Image (tube, rainbow over the protein chains, first blue to last red):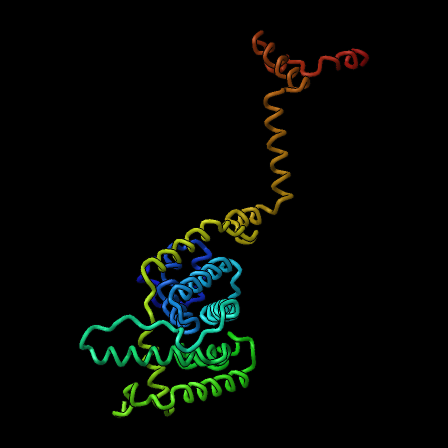
Length: 193
Length: 118
């Protein structure tokens, strides 16, 4: 089945096609899932290289478990976020604690592109504030507000109850607000942005 | 920092998701191909084998086994020609060679003794 014909096929059906030997299913799944997985890992780890390693490892685990995938169970994306979350947390536990200043500076924006500079400043501020949160709070906030998962989906990813998710998200947002307080003007929010 | 500001930061992060590099995509698809190459085709369940319906139509495995035995027995008879059949064949051949009528053919010569005793 060609790549174009797979655009309307669900992730779960693509995984079954892959397990049955379809050569295009893996490409379709890679194009569909890798950007989200990489974005999540990058925010969790604040390190592009490590985020790529986590993304590749999570996808590799997906390929390996494809023949045993139980249809009607968890969604592929939820399963992948769970694997990626665990891989990120493992790496965070093994690495030394990071300080606010250890988050890498973004690459220089194009000269004169004020909007890009503001955007880069905002991303850097958010990266640093997220890095300062406890791991579980960061995970919950990123999954809820950046990856767009529902609370029940996050509960499945993190293997906790929905109420615990709500608590983690609320505390995470409160922490971010406290960490970013006083930087409103610097981040360009005073013009009704 | 207000909730709306925080949502603005989240929106920026959503829009600024890093794109996977070509190298990463290539590594992931190479992994997928390597793993897929190791998959063994799943065995076809008995009910889905193409010849399962034909076997059922013939009466099942026992009937087919009987048919096969009968066919082999017929083949063996054709080649081996057991003695009684061979005797009959030779008798008929000699009778026709002597230009005798079919009434003169003695299919069971040993019965003559019983005929003489009346």
